[in-house]
Length: 220
Image (cartoon, rainbow, N blue to C red; front, top):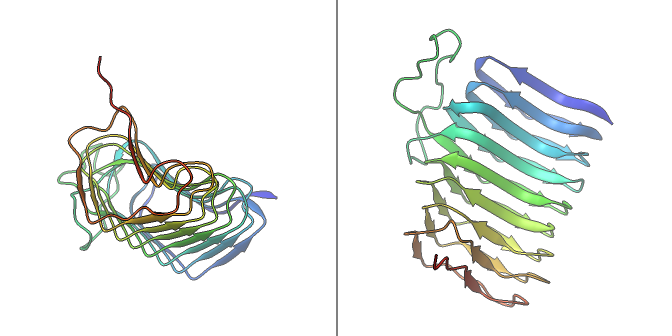
C-alpha cells in the first residue's frame, strides 16, 4: 500500500477522471482545494478512504460523481466544504490561495451517483454545509452514510445491508426519497441528538434489526 493514488493540494479547477486505482492507502486525496471534479474513477481495496476531499475550513466548488469504490476500509469523505444547496451547476471555483482567502459566493458541492460496496467503515461521510448528496448506492458497508453539518439536501440514496446504521444524521438538513434497508445490528435512519428541525419526506427504512427511523431526543 502506497500513500495515495492521486494527491492534489492547494490548487483549483482540476478534474480527476476515469482512473483505475488499486491497493493504496487513499485512492484520491485533495487538501485545501477549490473547484474540483472527481468523476468516473474506480478505487479498489483502499487502506483508508477511496476518495477523501478535505479543507481546513470553507472550501467550495466540488463534484464527486459516478465513481465506484469497492472493498477496503472506507468510501467517500468530504470535510469542511460550503455549497449553495444546488444539485447542479458550475463547480469551478477559483483558487482560495490566489484570491487572498476570499471565496466570494459559494459554488455547488455535489456528491452524486457513486457506488460503494463492501467497505469496513463508513460508506460515505459528509461533514460540510449546504451540500447535495444525491443518488448514491451503498451496499454491505459497516455503516452506510453519516451526514453532519447543516443545510444539505440528502436525496434518492439507497443503502442496503449495512452491519450497523444505514444512514446517520446530525445537524439540520433535508432528507427526501432515500431508502435504508437491511441493517444487521442497527437502524435504517438514525437521527442523533444534534439533529433538529430536519425536513424528512418520502424515505423508506425496512427490515432493519433495531428501528426503521430512530430519533435521539435531547431533553436537556
